[in-house]
Image (cartoon, rainbow, N blue to C red; front, side, top):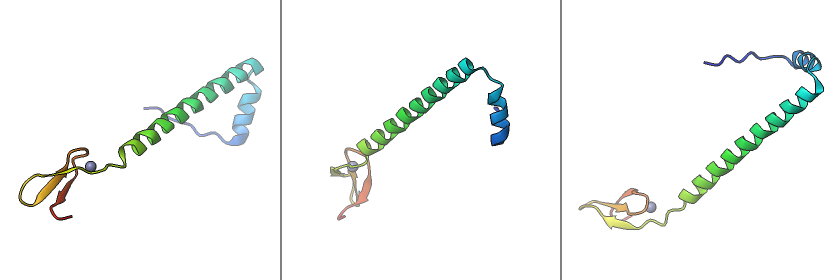
Amino acid sequence: MIQVIEMTHSEKVEMYQMVEKSRLIEMLIEANNVINRLTEVKNLRIADVSGSLPCHHNYIQKDTYWKSCTHCGMITPLGQ
Ligand SMILES: [Zn+2]
């Protein structure tokens, strides 16, 4: 388990003032890389969802009362 210690804004300012500029630049680049990766993952998830949502159901009769979609497997009473 990772314990996250929350710092106040002024504590962060104090801490970063002690860090060398070249180290700060590295941290900024790394932080931006993380943001870019998270953004890519989010975009992929949105694409997944929008790709799977609109199902043009193709029902086949399962038994006397139910039919199911051959694409997504959704089960619906006959006559709907
Ligand atoms: Zn379907």
